[in-house]
Length: 337
Image 1 (tube, rainbow, N blue to C red):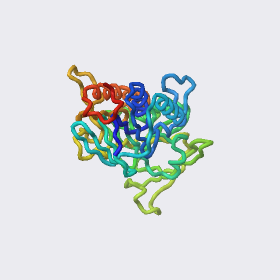
Image 2: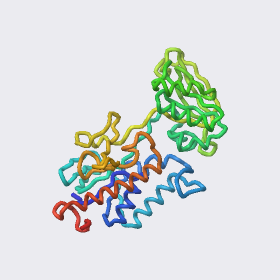
Image 3: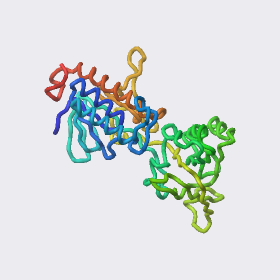
Image 4: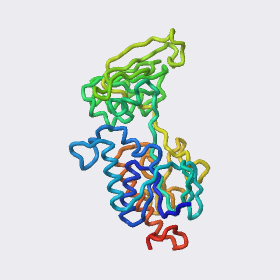
């Protein structure tokens, strides 16, 4: 059993920002990197909207810089994801995928949210090379392109509306004959001439390479919808020329390890954070000593810059919490006095 005063679960921008602030405060944080170190940002080849990088920066490079910065101030890193937790009144026990257990006085949950993928052929190879799960992040790279948006809910409509500012044309690919989106979002999409909808259609294959980017896609359709579930001979197939493919079928917050705990989450699994006695937003959860930062608690913005901001907030909130504990409640000798 390893004892710590502060564990940060997740090594994306939120977790790294929390690690920098916590390490500078001499909290000696341990960062659990999880199964996908760096989070969603590592799927983005270029980041142009992160403050301080006017020429842009690679997603992986930005993560590596953040990790080096956190290490420079004394944060330590360990591979392994949390499989389950026991959240006591002061001490929290984390059971890892490695079989190890860690006991900590405070926990920052920064495990992010994973975008849902379609399962189309070549999507993994081309993710970040013309295939994207974030129009706000990557839409500006597709000025003048014809692009596809896959999905039929509000997320897909938001992606399509944003992309219409840059792309020559936007085609929404939906496997049914009616949208799941709210009426107001659907109406906004229908009102734009640059956006069209392909009903009863699904994305089967994405064409291109990491050198060329996305060059086209194969779509399949069936009059009754859900074409990939139909017999192959009854399905129509068509190849279209596009320069980008965007997935708008939602995200899944990585909070399964909190099942059975008192940490409140919304109906989609996102962690709920609390306000203080003055009504100001905090990163505190419904369990004392547990904090949440980044996309795991943010179904709305999902940007690197907002994740970094809440990461720093979580570290400051955790520091304030640790300051309230007496020595018997801390688990490491170097805890703040």
